[in-house]
Image (cartoon, rainbow, N blue to C red; front, side, top):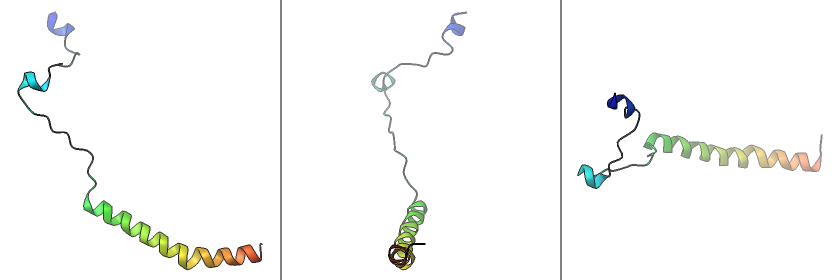
Length: 64
């Protein structure tokens, strides 16, 4: 019966008590995801320069 009472409670021992080191790593972004983001931003800059700015010049001078 005592085991059932403590079944849902996690062990609260510290790393010093366990004699083990805990290394936590953040969420590392894989290299291919970085390449995808870099390609996205390069395309965004290209699109803005090539299509958006010329279209805005026309829209500002002659609104629809």
